[in-house]
Image (cartoon, rainbow, N blue to C red; front, side):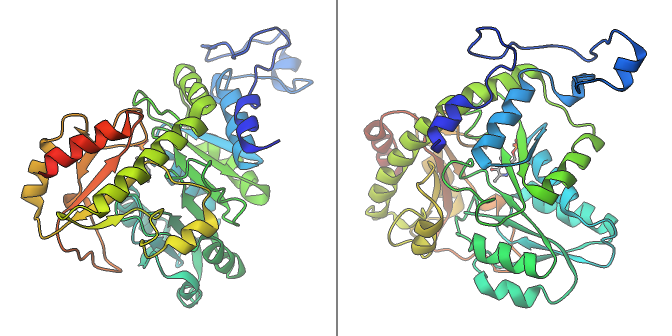
Length: 381
Ligand SMILES: *Cc1c(COP(=O)(O)O)cnc(C)c1O
């Protein structure tokens, strides 16, 4: 089956009744008829809420079908999913090793790497997201894990995912990607050789700005490690939120298509605007990573940024505040459009961020693209 058919037909209710959607089961415990059955159920059965009742079970199945994964772990937030993936990826005795982290990593993940990895004896080392084959030289020291995020969610550098994953594997290092931008739909990092794909379901999968959740998907040995660590940290998501995520998955591909198409149209209009010096959208032909992007992705999401021409952060905030349809807010991937002045968020150590003006990020929602452009044009004016 093709991807869009899998998105609709995977994660169906497991009971043989006639429901289209799984019931929302609220339960911590699941009782058994005997002690023998409680400890050694045959066939294996649900025995405790944390393992996932409906619809948590169906959501894992559906995300597994999307990625072609052998195990999917659900996490309380996107941040928790990246942390869980990193923890599953660390070898048993990581002390003295390094972790190679893309300089474009999501800020709170970066903070986790700086403050918590050293407690495992692992030193975070940041690398240029555009390092490509050059990653091989950085893998000359014992490396526990390589973290990717592509494109970076503020600055939109595209990484050579297949190349970096392959180099990591041959050096005996695990690989983890923050796959929130593609939502597992525009690209499949597991097919490109990455071991663990983490994603903030909060963004496009949820899609309606009403929940926080994350997922990690993996195959083979990585899936076994993930399954082992999955329960260790006590993570669990509510069945209500799992239901909303599953519901979001059914329309994910359509929503991405609309956001992506409107986003590209608005990116082209921004590109021609005199107050804009650069549009950081990898789907634009003039983006420095466009060819690499085309070779790995089958489309664009609606999240991208642009650099203003000689306009500093203060004035960029006034522009953002002058929008009516675009609201000011963190996050992205919802049905409503958002604008974010983001210079204050950029942290770089491998490659300093240099730009001709302030950086504004957009999340293009499901409104009419002409209305969105009119709103941005008046604010820029
Ligand atoms: C938002 C985001 C996350 C974290 O998701 P939360 O659910 O808010 O914790 C992780 N990575 C990227 C790239 C994000 O944009």
